[in-house]
Amino acid sequence: MPSETAPKVEVPGWYIEFQAALLRQAPRPGEITKEQAMVWTDPQQGALHNTLHQALLVDPRFKFLGSFSLTVPQDYDPATGLARLRTKAGREFSYWNPALTDKNFSGVTVQLVPDKTYTVKLFGNLVEVKSEDWMSLLHSQRAILVGAQGEALAMELAPDQLPVGKSVLSFDEKKKLPVLDGYHRVPRMYRYADGDWNFDLNYFENGWAAGYLVLCFCDDSA
Image (cartoon, rainbow, N blue to C red; front, side, top):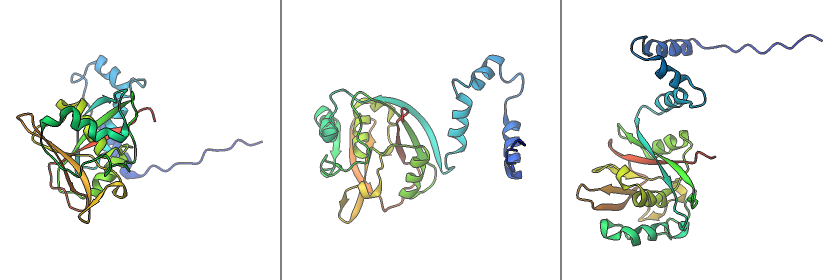
């Protein structure tokens, strides 16, 4: 029986040029040590793959700013995630929007699981974007959408990871966000230099000027 021939895959010219451009930008001998190169090429660590994907597959309107790990406490109750933050750290808030309640955000897409560890990435927008652009970025990162509860837990457990003087958003699917005064509302926190916090709501339907940040929760076990 004649052997089957694998179908020929045509590599487009633009991709060949893309590969060549990457190679031209690689460090030359003398700029990188053998040990450093071995770390980058170790398939077990996946450092080169992960770094290239992070740098090249993010919409250029956004910038990756870093990440941190967050382990949900064993006593965490998804139904009272916002009340938990207010009870534990209420004195630190110069303002808390009264509509930021567990009831209003009870339809969150993904509930955080007690005793589970998540990776939380921070992205910033370099130009004005729409909420739909933020959502496309989150989907490209395979983010889980944890809404206000995720933002509250980040404020409780990792406050030093949230930059001072920046508005930080935590999105959910539009249909999952509460509608108040005719608008879908997006939770936003702001950390002041004096240690106070502002926990408020913005509008999904409005645009976002350059300089906002967004929390991107990822479940590495999925």
